[in-house]
Length: 497
Image (cartoon, rainbow, N blue to C red):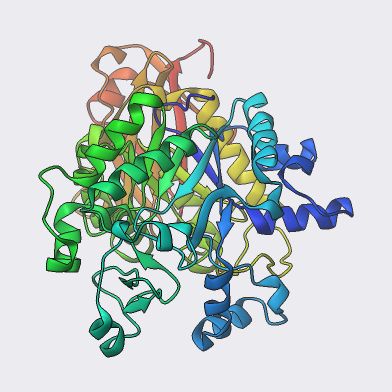
């Protein structure tokens, strides 16, 4: 087992797509045990702490058949891959029949081989868990109807989109409270004691083969959310919430297992309190892409310890590609920002090379897109430099960017710093399409009267400044549109990071 660092850098890989393309490169079908070492090297560049192999579990044939009959889904598939064929549609990785590694990927032996390759590189492995629902052909549907939200014959007659008649029971289809039911999954009952025990067993088994789990739509299983979604159909509300009970039990067996939550609706703090190590920071994503710099700054004023439990990202399999939503310059600036913030960071395979097509997770083939070598070089340089510096082992602080009466452009700068045993580090990002200037006071009074060198971690820039200036009037910064500084602060003439 590879114990992940306190703030891991995670690379999400669409497993089936990646293996298909690997097979095309090698000239033979590739399972997880057949991936050449250089291909593993490509998805574990310096700075990556864990790989999330998305979609390894056995997918549902019945769920796939439902997807094939859905006109809206078929349109989405064709929009992403115009020449898509039925043989390229694998079904949803979140319509899970069983938590067994799909035979098409090499089964349990293939996953063990993959984990060994990652472990040799000091890289951990994350896998999926879907707590809210299972496929309609899951063995649980017939063997354990007590795990599910139940209906009756009248429900199935009146609302066939919301309920499914299995022949032995009428069960609710999976949903969240703001959307129609999903047609290809069956709703588990978070209030059912038997389901909680079964979930613990599933997660204990997953914990034997990986280092952590990304829990899909984790907030749906919280007592308050579940009660609002299902009302009396859920039955008596348990005194203890779902996640504290389940996570506590699993950690008795796997004390270092990492739990990461896909989370929305401002429930990140609540899920952290219920046992999750990390929760998606969708608010930061939305603010960086669509809101003002001041809204980003306001978000980053949150308590540092809380922020250490967030997952920062610019794309993932649910979001559009960053190269589609951001200009190249803004993408680089945003990447430098999130890479140097506290918390886990999530990077999506293809993000480094500038892929534009957002691929539906049902597909195991994507269109060819020319890679952007300069973008890949930038990301690898960024992640490697942050790792090598050790900055994120220290303490983080958001800094003020002070303008002056006739120049308020500094409001478009985000500045922060790290300090600890690894040294002192400063990041400044211009999140605007115009030049910006400001004075930034560094919070290290011990800089005193000495002379200090500010050395770029991503480039060759070097500046020498007196400590008194840095801590009183502040460092003068002038950045072009979407410009960045990622700097170490060391005594002039001393060793450089």
